[in-house]
Length: 211
Image (tube, rainbow, N blue to C red; front, side, top):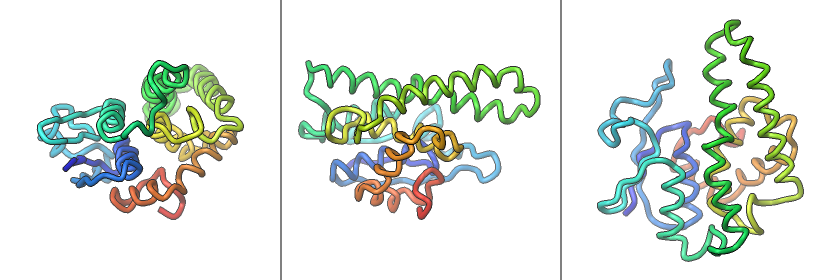
């Protein structure tokens, strides 16, 4: 059985969602952030030297990094679902979104998170951060206008990966200016598998208002 080492309010929530979509058995080992520092507990370093989540264990296989986990789970348990057919244009777009989620979409959010702690000292950086935020979220909003999913007509791993940066952005009010993205988040958060994952993972700050 797959074991997920799950940290609350983290990227690992989307792995629970994927597992529910795949409809396979798994168990969750829960870890809680420090209420003051919001850092992961030191116990996670017993699972992986970085002390980060998610980490999954499947037999003698251990994987960290949610993109790698998403790819592994879909290849191993997806039975051809949740990914376009290899060799197609849709597949290449799918791979692009898988990497974009952490390689690009998260950057302006992380910059905002860390510079917020600098107070007025962050002021010289904010015009560039604002430009990058608008650049990326305008791009994503345009791509998702009149679309239900990031790639093709069905849910794929691209949606799993893109969920966290968009949910984090919505929590910070960024999606107020991007209706296609806001509607997309509302849509995925009503999927039965998504809601089941919330029950497994516990309180999730970035989830629906009722979670």
